[in-house]
Length: 79
Image (cartoon, rainbow, N blue to C red):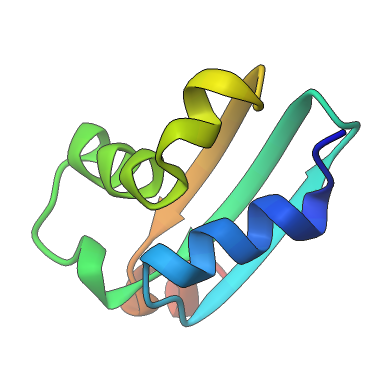
């Protein structure tokens, strides 16, 4: 079974994060990802970076992942 910690670790290993929160029930997950890597990227490109960080796990283990992806500046404005 996939855990929120394993999803969080997967994202952190593939993407430098300023802040990261992951909630979920083992199949469906929600993530708040704050990273400088998102600077100048569209929402789709940001999501692609997170999917790439999780790699094969997105296809094989994680049923659904909804995410909010922000730059540190955006996070400070809404935080």
